[in-house]
Length: 264
Image (cartoon, rainbow, N blue to C red; front, side, top):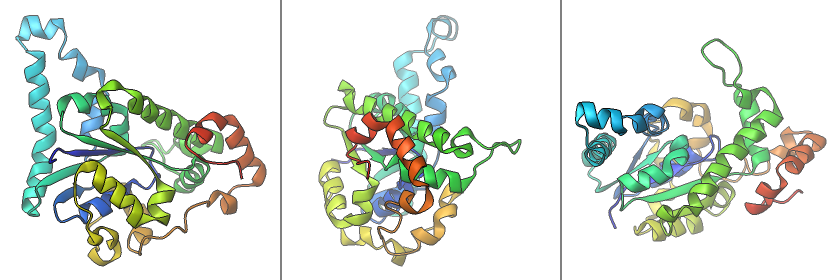
C-alpha cells in the first residue's frame, strides 16, 4: 500500500503532533501545512470549471481536469518525499476534512485520518490563540467560548459526515488526540496498520529530530520540541470556569457523547 495519506480535523486538535510523528517514519514524508488543496477544492470556482459553460466553450474534459488537479496536488509532495529519500507522502492540512470525499475521488489509493479532540480543550486553546483577521478583528471562534465550541462542532460534524460517505468506506480512520498523546505507541501502531506501513519507534521521538516547523505550528513550538506527553489533556478543567464548561457540553452533548467524551 503506497497511496497518499490525508490528515484533517479542527485546528488545535493535535494535527501538528500527528504530522511530526508521521514525518518521523523512514518511508513517509509529511511536511507543514500546504493549504492550497482544501482552499482550492472548497471554492465554487473549482467545480464551476467542470461545468457545461467551460466544457462547451473551452473544451474542458471534467475527468482530465481532475487528473491535472491531482497531479498539481501530488507534485510538491512527491518532490519533498524524493528529497528525503521516502517513498510515500502525507498532507496535513486542517481543512482537508472539508474535502475528504473529493480527495477520495482524485486519489483512489489514499487513506484518510480524521483527528478529533475534546471540544472543551479545543475551545480553551482557541481562546488562548486570539487569532485575528487582517483588519485586527478577532475570528468568531476566538472571540467567545460559545463561538469556539460552534466552530469545533461544525468541523467535527463535517468529519463525521465524511466517515459515513460510501466513497470513504474502509479508507478513513478516526483518531482522538487524547489517545495519541497518552498512548502514542499503541495509537501509532493502529495508524500504521491502517495505512499499511510498518510501525517505527522513531515516530515517537519528535523531540530528537527537531524538525523544522512552519506557519501556525510555530505557536506550539515549545510543546512540539518536547517528548510526547499528556499535559494538555483536560486543560479545560484548569482554564475554563466550571459553569462555562458545563454549558459547552450541554450545547453539544450528542456530539461529545458520539466521540466518547464525558461531562466530567
